[in-house]
Length: 326
Image (cartoon, rainbow, N blue to C red):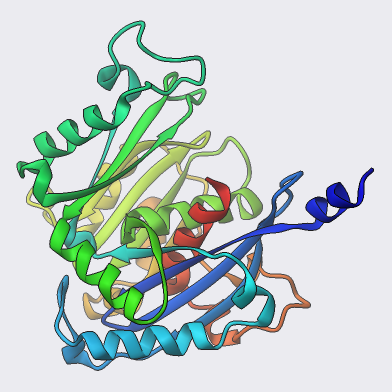
């Protein structure tokens, strides 16, 4: 083996995820070997508070406060992470982000899919779909998308599309640039949290057993029923079709027995609605596990204990996970 190959075998790909919300700025940095894959390693977790008036929903009101918070969390990075070429993604509020999943075959004309399963000219078709679903001209949208391969349940490749008003993305890119950070992707909070919970499920939950993922955000709750790495059903609450949260949860599983429930996000908001994790377990008839980075961290890696056990870190973790695995 040549010296260059030996060095490459030890090289790692680093990625950072930034969750920007009313609770403050949360940063997660992950890494994975470039050659031979192997487990994802949690390199760093950090957070910085934000004044309540810095944000108004999806709108950034105080850019200087956002820039100062970003500089604070990135300024704490260990040497290895700081020196790495970081792929950095930032979350957008669920209220400002439209996420849709459509079959690849519906976008790509029959017979026009190349050997890799991805249409050579898929991007304009994705933009047209985003424009149709959002009801907004594509010139006013910022769109990101990815292709998921077929699974035993889905039987066909799927395209996941995330879209938001361009103004929301541009102001975040500008704030990041002012803090010396280059953003490479956008993602919705709920979608990023789901990615984190699916990653954790591989290590914590029995394989081939249906389970439920729940994310609690500022605008409400998202729930997914999953089996064999496929999303079977998705639910949002509050919603007109559900009288209360118990009904929404029961409609999500629709009589199917979930083996476990994983919950992430702002769990204190459940308490504000007089609902608890135990109530979720009772409604679904399954044990409930809060998402924690601690179960995915190297015990020899010194990280903030409060953040390791904070279910709200799922969004930042899911954003960074995308950077190291795509």
